[in-house]
Amino acid sequence: MSTLVLLRHGQSQWNLENRFTGWWDVPLSDVGEDEARSAGRLLAAEGLNIDIVYTSVLTRAIQTADIALGELGRLWVPVKRHWRLNERHYGGLTGLDKKDTFDKYGEEQYMTWRRSFDTPPPPMPADSPYSVLDDPRYRNLAPGVVPATECLADVIDRMLPYWYDVMAPDLLAGATLLVAAHGNSMRALIKHLDGVSDEAITELELPTGVPIVYELDHQLRPTIPGGQALGDPEVIAAAAEAVRNQGR
Image 1 (cartoon, one colour):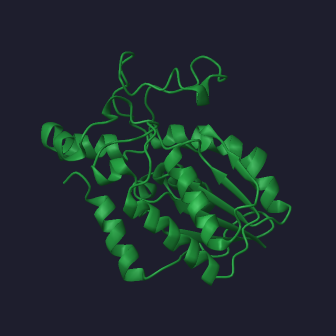
Image 2 (image 1 turned 30 degrees about the vertical axis):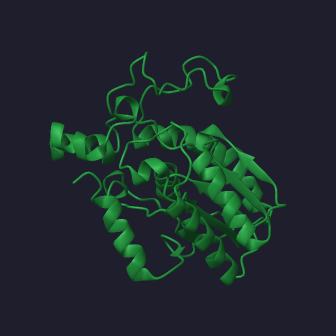
């Protein structure tokens, strides 16, 4: 048996402002910091001793991991960061207010861009103030690797090599892993673990700051589909519904 904990970062400043964020780097809000502390306490109450942590290279995920580890008293464990765990790139929507976008384009187009499995938003213009092409985090990547936009299918394609090459071997070696990342990179991993259909995964909503614990067998298949979300079920359900209704 191996243990994998998935944790969507706490509320970010742009979550609070109801803006599309993607690869743009923003910090946690005060609420997000509290959510990360709560997640750490929930993991401690479960007696989970995290051995290795994985994060994206975005500040909100890094802060969430650090705060949660502090609550666990395990700031010393190894941390591995990789751009393949980044949130999906929202292209030309990056920085836009979700409610304004909903009102301008209508519910059908808005939901297609936000939740479609294989339809990305419009690409980010080359002169966008939210371009990360010159960001030092991505300086050594080959030309064309940094996307101009992504759908969930794209996130799966770029995340799975990291799962197979790095994360899975750590799990098979017996380590308990914490992955602190983003709504769509978590959704991509859950789709792979649980074999969720393309249609069903678009309906999955992940609230911020809620740890999901997967127990995996020797073939890294979940013993309980969907894992176990830690916390008050009613609070989690309400938070998931709030995510579903963003922009409306």
